[in-house]
Length: 131
Image 1 (cartoon, one colour):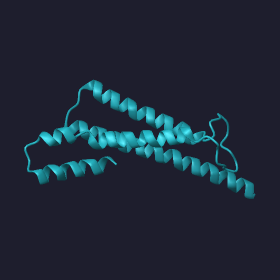
Image 2 (image 1 turned 135 degrees about the vertical axis):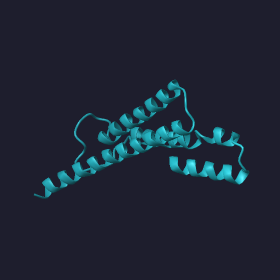
Image 3 (image 1 turned 90 degrees about the horizontal axis):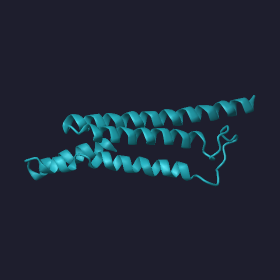
């Protein structure tokens, strides 16, 4: 009975982690669409940004699903694997995408004729929304 409860807990943790990645992916897509509404982008740029977000989402799902690098069941009981490279790569890619989304509008906002304080406020608001 206790082993069954532990297996169900392990599956619930995996489900929560995958749901977290989906929520982050949709939040990043929402920010990308907001940026496109503020500053229309060429179709190629939008497609490449969406592709980058899709690659991150897919890679992150696989990195969380197979933490030890094997295509097998998740280890039970959960253990620390010798190589956590894919998970670290997913985190670094997430950070890069967040910085890219946060700084996407900075050149446009810098060229708007506003006072320096209002321009800085707009940059901070858009930058904090992206992270």
